[in-house]
Image (tube, rainbow, N blue to C red; front, side, top):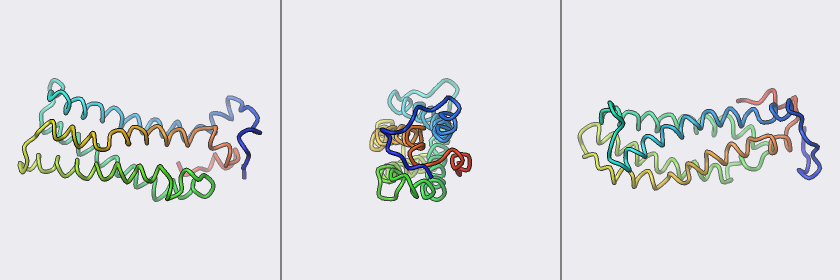
Length: 172
């Protein structure tokens, strides 16, 4: 078990850095998908213009896909990944900032998903300003969260709490 003060840690070799940074790299890849989709969704809401060839139904389905995938991503983190990491890494404990961010994000996602479903069913008109307002209610928290998780999973953090051997067995 590694448990060192960061001021006493020796420099990492390139190979060690890759090992300790592996989870951050994987998370960054997953988060990049959310960033790309968010940018499309947000740009449409902000400009009231869809990309060429994208129907309103396709846009709304993209919004639902975004919501469903982010919810699933966070469920996996909260059920499988965070509890394992929280054994040693305080940033992943239930009371910490990452979990608080999940709650803010999911409150916004619930509103967003409900509105999108109502639009798809014809129970609500598509109002771009309303979609943008909903996105704005959790967007900053989402973007901060995407960055915070990657940083907390980075080599400089994981090496404080886990051995090289343990890093090869991480549940991610």
